[in-house]
Image (cartoon, rainbow, N blue to C red):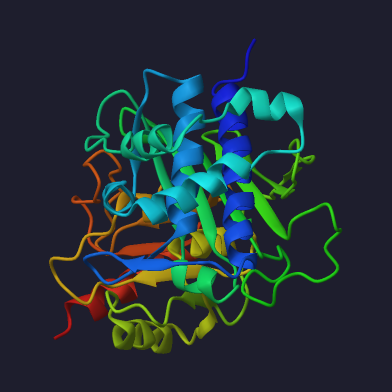
Length: 351
């Protein structure tokens, strides 16, 4: 009997790995360039190149699936110089394994690259198969050479079935510490973490070629005393003072660690490096983008993490490009979630 979603997970792992290699190429070059989106967040060559590579591979292998990506190619179509630099990156990024590279395929021109980026325009995830991707989550961390994430998830009728998060610069034993030292010359620094619903989560080292051997992540990561809460302290969309109040009520270590990416917070929980993360939005109308959560959330759930919104509702991934049905988040080991949720709810209601 075949394993459900085995091919989808394999292709997703390979394409995220290749996209991570591209992003690291940008990071180590001296020609990086950023632009600004409407919300003032930075976008790099890596965002565009990574999205092009991922979408191209997914569309090649699953041509009838819809794709929802964070970026579009409008800035590249308006700037031929930037377009050509992205195409150069995409055309030169290859896995050092012929069979893996043939599975993913390549693009033949800058035009194909822009068209691939724009295939990520799906708006509805309620029905059918929809891939959700974030080409670089934690761009600010990326620009500083810190851990960041490349994420990809498959939804089927609004439910996560496969999740893959590539984490360049991440050390599994210290997710928010320094970039791993003594990485073998032919192995990029970082980890590739994935899950299929009902099948658990695994971790591999990133590779320049074929996938490295996986190791299963243990279920139910241990809970530390005091409780460790990870956060994104530079976030302007979260109510950081209320996060501090929650931690105080719980006598928790906060921020036990700080990152620049929500996906990395899920990974920290999956690795047992943190016990919880919370998100109380600064604005009552704030709703998170789906690609900030899809993939990493499944990986965390598959090791025993419970995830709800601030009011205890299950996260609804079928509402489109934003999680319109949920406000805020509470993610924690199953044994801690109820206690944290009670405190978060009380603090969130306070004026």
